[in-house]
Length: 465
Image (cartoon, rainbow, N blue to C red; front, side):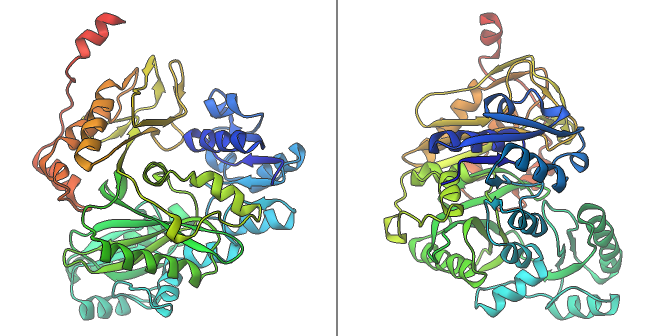
């Protein structure tokens, strides 16, 4: 096992890894930018090293500074968390060259799955279902027009190096195809330094269903079931749950086997996620593979009782998985709500600033992963997520009820947050019935713009304070 792990990330995931290290008896080092000096991860880690000013391009994305910090602190492994350098094959290779273990898959697996067009080709060769689309990157306008005509509109343009919805455009007719192609290329170039675009047939109103993978370095690959991540806005997930109500045992088994097969096809080791689109006719298609831990991993931890981060660390240390597929058991239902410092009544505008009062909910079946506290200043330089609330109970309806109860107890003052919008959304009939898709929230907001509001009991809470 490792003696010291450097965590090359920030926020709640950095704190999550610090806690896993402590439970495994491993010393932890957190690197941080000048904007993150007061985060809980920095306070809780055994050591902390400042690596630069607030912009990620001058701190969290600087490979040389992170490697230097690891060498100075004598860390024998680096955990990249998610985002930043987590899916950077070059960074993983440099770690190897410096005799530092990268807690993630082999660089080649990251590279093959990171290029979305290459990932499609790999999955297609491996027999994993993929949506109809281009065989690779679109090389010319004429090729784009011919492909779209052959597939029939609507089609979707995607960045080959994409993520987070960047470089993605849905096109409904030939008149707008070339305009959207140029826009997608420009956005992808700005976001990823690569303007390559590929095309797929657009699946109308699908569900986004992903399977959690665990794999060791001895060839064993298993899945830990699925998560439904369809409740999203502008391709950003807001609420995730497990299990997915749209799957029966047969479809779940089929999709799980496909996910494991996908991981085996690239020689995968570590924690990862295979993502599928599930159409209304129950046909599923490979979408992408995330070669890292996911934001929503606690949902799976709650229904399986398996600590994914600890297993990821053990796998990187060369230890075999401690269980087989038949050993994985699922219990109850879990729902995760992302808490963002955004004003939902103003088109979800990010709202950095100081948190003046913070009180997290508790009680049976409630977990809160967050790096903030009263007095903490949310910097404007990073993603607006400040925490996650996860509720678990015996049934889906009980988990929904518990989740709303906990959200109503969540008090964060000083900055607007998405807590009230989450309560509003969880009361909506389509969500209550599990009848939703990836476009559900945007259609809901078109029909019913969210105006904010207060929650029952707010006045009494103010009186108590």
